[in-house]
Length: 233
Ligand SMILES: *[C@@H]1O[C@H](CO)[C@@H](O)[C@H](O)[C@H]1NC(C)=O
Ligand SMILES: [Cu+2]
Image (tube, rainbow, N blue to C red; front, top):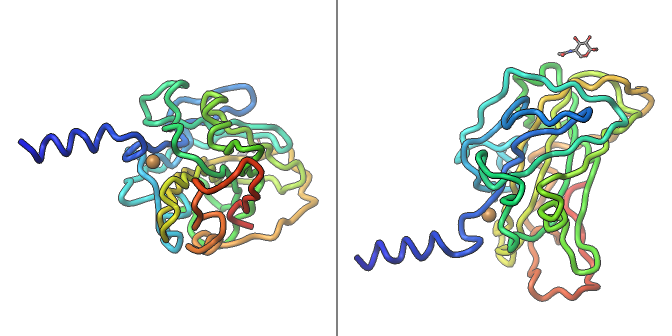
């Protein structure tokens, strides 16, 4: 009796188990179905070990399933990573608003976007949001009905890519590995790029350290004007 009451209480605590999923992509004016062209998990929990290979495109304890679809995207266009609390949630249920932190997006060129795990070298960051005038980028995404706007650079080479979109929740980040990182990877075929740039690339895992100032932090002691260092190069 007492135990079941405790379990019920824990389930109702805001922020205890409420996470988020990059569930679908909007590109070229079209919103693709949930899980279409995305390495999608069935569970919305975060990754917390920055040295784990699951930091690349998610994975256990969230079983992820690659999609047999590839989404065509034009270089220079802006896509929207659409975030949802669960795969069944609507635009008003993006993530617990108490989950506050930065938002990022990375690309990695791959030979086959349907089969590549994303683990290892090749990632470059193309979008980020941190903390501005007392507001976290995660809250901007929530206010924007779960849409994270990401411009695909015009200057990259055409080909298949993984697009890794990420939301980080820092409510528990006072202790090491307390930051909750939620990410999924979309499977893209990019065309229209000029191929004039070859961005410096980094490994995931590897791009984050558990003591990065943006991941090991007490956000409750911050002021409106406090600086914040977004993780990842
Ligand atoms: C990517 O797009 C190009 C141009 O439309 C097309 O030729 C190629 O077959 C596409 N590749 C994949 C894997 O969809
Ligand atoms: Cu959470």
